Amino acid sequence: MAFCAKCGKEIPEGATFCPACGASVGPTSAAPPAPEAPVSGFDTLIKDQKAQEHWIWRLVAVGVDYVVVWVVLGIIALAVGLPSFFLGGGAFVAAVLSTIAILNGIVFVLYNAVAETTWGESLGKHLFHFKVQGKNGSKPTFGEAFVRNISKIYWLLLLLDVVIGLAVTKGYQQKYSDHLMGTTVVRQ
Image (cartoon, rainbow, N blue to C red; front, side):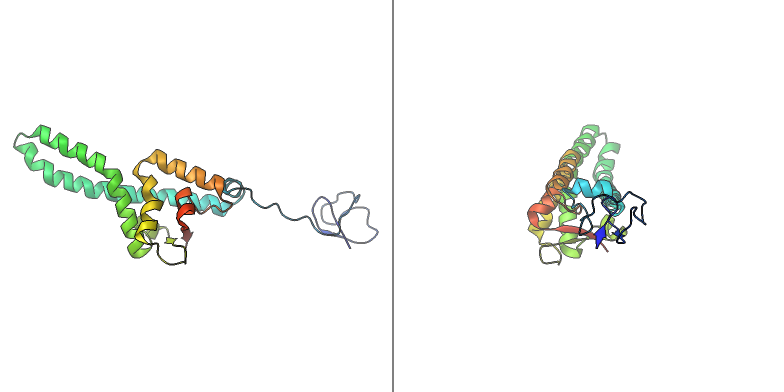
């Protein structure tokens, strides 16, 4: 039994052209060519539409979570700063807003860690049907969730976490911090 060197389909004995792709039958192999295994998550991301959709929706989910945290912090800022503003405390309002801006990254990391430990997902992940799984397939521990989210303290760290994760793993579902913690984000 011979297989086409170009498309891998079976070639009938004595054929001079492949019936599937029309290639000239020259050297044939005894087995169909094996599909190329992905070298990295980038390789999978480039070739697999499912992987591309996975990361697009994860990015949207992070955006939803970021808006949720900013809205809550904005309400707190208004509740604390508005009375002071009307009483002539403009400097106090500026200090409150600066503090909230600085705390935003820390609050964002804690929000994600607590949500993933409690429910296995944040609100953004829930809306787009993602779950975070720990090493044994259940919800991650607080330590796992905290470490996997620490890069969310600043957008550039998150970008590096994703890029390095895709570079060092063959799958496409893990950032580097996920790889370290043994956690995975899966679509339900």
